[in-house]
Length: 297
Image (cartoon, rainbow, N blue to C red):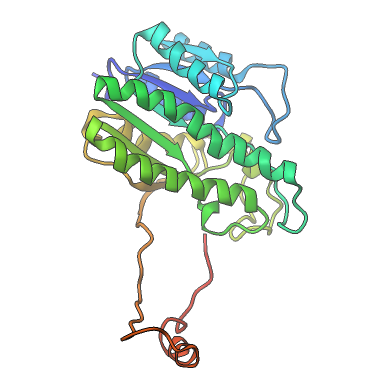
């Protein structure tokens, strides 16, 4: 028996990379899959081929059940269309996995408004557009699994202020939704993945900490950088065994799975009354400002 027998999932960005690995892993575990992929470049430009159709062919060829979806999930219509297609084709939607994304890398002082808006739209708004109809359907059925994709870029990636902001926003969206939806039997968790994909292929060597030496995505099958390595933790979070796991962020990179802690104060400075500015300056230097560390990925 598969871990996801009888389940139905919708996966955005399922045509390539991490999304493709998840779609194939879900199908191998008995899940019917709606593979969504708009078919665009990393920069968001439309392509002629349909990677979603290719993945569906792979899944069907292996005896699984899948259909493709080519809608823009960064629109309300696209999000609703994805959920409605799952219900029409398979009768329900149990699992939503949000992987789709694009890049528009630039330093903050050089970034255009369009570059900012494009990335926030696809990543952060895209999560909203799919989660809203999916959670409404899951609430009625008192069951659901939502797995969102953040990134360790949210922890301070230089040259990616739009992407970092969107991925940090996805964490906030995940935590808020987890707190509000758990009473309806719906779990919401996040993944920070590490793998070689079309996105990492665009990173200039040396621009990011640890970026030097990252292999190109077409050369990583079977290695720690293979995007397929991200799928197993997603399978678990989508399963019945994860019913009490919600509001969490897991890292999946190579052959490692990590649990990230929520942001929490590590030092607290108390006062007996309103702050005196001169006193605060002195006390900060001897307390909260000791042993500061820079944001790190």
